[in-house]
Length: 354
Image: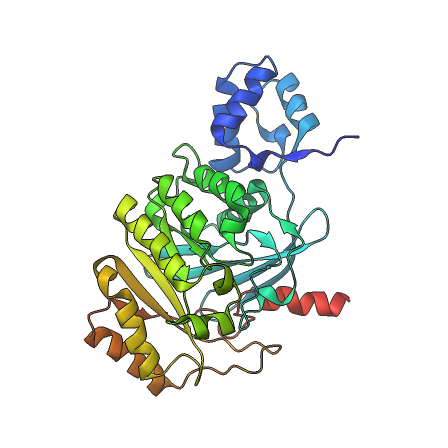
């Protein structure tokens, strides 16, 4: 029997094409879209304005629920981390964070990661496969259904594509995901409320610029020079800083949209005044359209060569950047009392199951 496809894999236009191919009227796609993303049903049988034949056709070809919740961790600050099991038994993480500006969900795009950053829990387990766009979309839908059940009329308002994996290494599925969650007939999450983070795949940054989306771009930089960056991020061998910054310049020129540079502070490694001044110099010519997000490190057991920077070092780094005219801030930590670092919960669970 042919394996059913997740209906969340389809954008609304692709679903419309499918209905036409099946000899159905194209308005059926909009009806189904409303059931999936506005009413958020769990079964095709609940789509009561479709005739029985159409519901059976959908059930024959598609599945609605692929993700199964394995573990839920709830932090005292309201952060919720979910471990989901996929149909092939792989595990992924999704995180809901509460901020003053709304509810933000961090999604995963790959099972494991091949980028190999030496400080990151996500890369402890190599990439098994890419997620489909439907598997990424369903992370958002699952969180929204959880919120619906709480009866507080809360909505996911922001998305960060910063979970396990490199989104631009799964480019097509990530773009389909963005189009689906942004669709005004469905979840309608504004493009400017969505941020995609990349470790620096320069050619994909250029391709992303050509998409002309309003989606925000974040670049995981973490070091201001090639020697240091290569020592903590092997991706820098393929895309050294000069090549990366040329791609960022292309993006800025094409979109005129601000880029965020993520910078995890590692004690005695990249958190000194020397690195702060180098970073300021690197970003000087694009400081009007850049922002540096300084991130206190969440220690990972397997990467015990790294420690969290002292508070004085973090403040000092921040003040140097400000003095040099670089827009910057220190990220507010979420979920520090649970497995906060991306990939930690998945890694722990896989060890238990081994």
